[in-house]
Image (tube, rainbow, N blue to C red; front, side):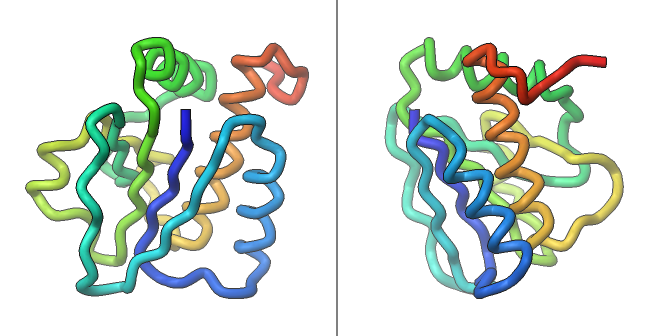
Length: 140
């Protein structure tokens, strides 16, 4: 299953970009990053065999293990792409929120979208490591 990060704004050459790249390189699954302008620009319609996950501070809080189980269930259910959307400062519009398969939160704090990308990339690496029984993830 393709793990597709779609984010508003350009990350450029930054420490956050290095973190994102570092984690995405370590993921055994295919990955893709698409950057959209802060405002405007259109989001391509989702492929039919995909799931859409919005990152939002008001979304569901999942443990790393539960997140891995979600990915596993989607993959085993025939989904070919998981699209992770990181919005701009104004968040996501109501129509996109209503159509999402999951609204995911990294906690009630507001995170800069550049850090949210790095956090998402790390959690994707962690989730795929859990599913591969790799020792990177250790439960405490």
